[in-house]
Length: 344
Image (cartoon, rainbow, N blue to C red; front, side, top):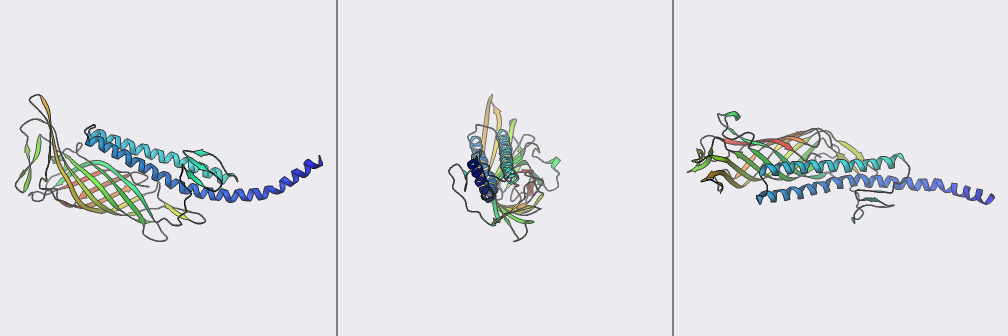
């Protein structure tokens, strides 16, 4: 009996040392989990980029329509946004558990494995902690309605269908904190591919007449007449809004997740492709014609853009200052309104 009591007392003497070692290890694991949250976001965005590229390939191979492609892209964006939300919630739960209980939680969720010294995902090795990360990067995904502002006309008088004219944007943007000790002002810049579509109304189509491009009535009944401009542009925005600062012993981060954001700026770039598609029936057979030509459009693209967000999704507006057609007597300028998904 005396031997058992002695062993029990000796065991109790090691408890403070064990608790102290676990506390230090616990703190380090929490830091690694904070870093893992950023990795989860980046991985889901890369997965979304791959899925969007696959949808675009199906669209270019005429396997799906533009409407179906837009729907698939929107569903993919929602899916990966939910993935990010759920995975971050799991990591936050692990952090809460570690901070609430003074011990190491040894488990695995979504491929995250916590050992004594490292936090791993699959075969990745331990990462060094960056003290201050002033620049982050996001995939830009935007979709919405497109039309043209025409001098002397309102949108109700537009020759382009409001509901059928749409735009899509896919790109990559970096966001850099402007000031050392404040994240209220950020500079957002990058590149984007913009696809601006105009669906022509009243059985009309575009025709080049010398230096001008005019609308004429097609000799047959058109099922669809669509004009599209594909641009490569380089946007830049000043973004303002509050953020949350998270600090550790050897790092700090600013987060704008679920915060108000306002972006004001513009873009400049080049027209890569101009195409008109006509769909009609002739002699009982369906016909599709594609015309890839300049249509006297401006090759240099520049304009103003803005977005406002109250979370991960923003209301997005962009307006071309250049006219669509160079030498037309009446100026037409492209305008787009829709949703933008790069608001982390």
